[in-house]
Length: 344
Image 1 (cartoon, one colour):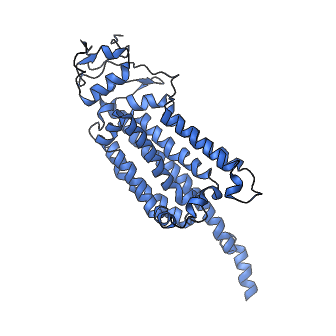
Image 2: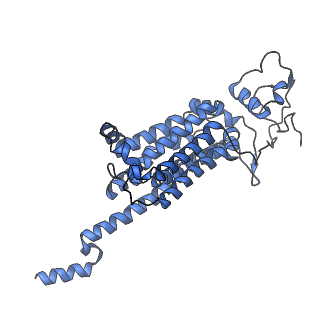
């Protein structure tokens, strides 16, 4: 199979017609892809060599370094700092935040550190290479890991007494009254995710690493708001009632439908990065840009619905048990009949 100087394979004929030879030694793939994404010519003074132009049915085989895990200071340093801060506050400083007899929150700690691990697996593992350069569906999988297991475990990993200094603060109460309201949570989550999936903003994040990092942190923050009405760790601002949760979840699913439909049913490939990216094979499957976009949109909708419906089922079970305790006759019709006979 013919290969380019990068050892990566060809790119679709719509991309730029040359590559920068001098940049090859420094950062072959990043420089190459970022230049053709933006439609830029290579820097003046650099030696340019014509690119091999493949035929229409040429299938490329880009290199993916499965051993590369990100060690960027912002990512790894930030996660290590958050983990260290949690360890300090729940360990040596625990008795300053809660009563002296409070034991170390082992279960909370397991969930909290699992959340940090999920976040790192999403953005620090080789999945990030595939998501940033080749497949929209891989990028969607990143977002789903951040929004679902990472965000849910993060909230479940926070003891009430750990968040009380913020949620119980007199000056912050008006802010929490607004941002923890289910209506605000649902609207903020829907707005943040929908805005970031606009083509120009989504592609800008793929070309600019700091913006990409900001995108993921904003999505994570929006996900925390999304799940707060169900898994709030605060007694001052507790979860919504079970009946309210069962109304809240379908409302958010409906609110996310336009962006899902926009991505899934678009007749065009929306994001240039993935339109012009080399096609890769994963598990002997190669997707066209259009098929990849269809898969990504389906993952967004179906993944969101599956997780939301599981949460809905749990809320329904709690609501039913709570109703049964308040009115035993609802769960035991015979008991209701016996009670009626006795009253007569």
